[in-house]
Image (cartoon, rainbow, N blue to C red; front, side, top):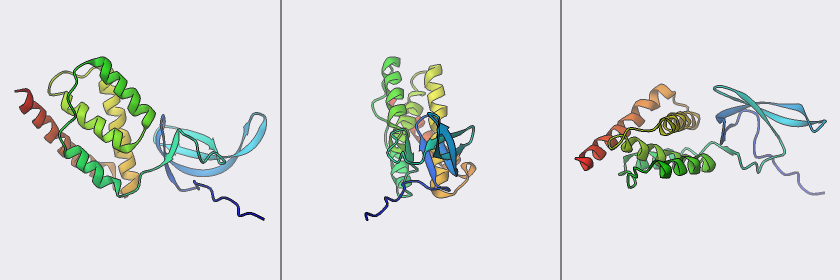
Length: 174
């Protein structure tokens, strides 16, 4: 008899959904899907609750929160010079879509750094502003889930790095 495959997720795990963001698996419960009740994880995020089948370990929309070692990488990214500051709104919209589909914390950190610096050159569009807020919240919530620090503790640190980016971008634009 073969060994039973261990589940990727369990109650109490923090996970990230591409659309709903960071959430905690709070319960395993039966939910009707296609008429038959199946085991689903209940996930609570800041603003919503959703369920996904417990046998979907390879769900491309869901991943575990990043490892703690990624925080050092994010700090490095936020301290580096921004990528070429593109002013074409269509290219930024494409980048927003790419970050949305990727959903990885490193991509989000690079996006926030670059978009934050872009503000020194040009006012952000409503779409860019909304994306900045959405992904900043995602970064803060995942960082908090990884480290156990409160968002109130993390936010000033991130703001410090982003303010340095803004000052660099302003000096390049001058």
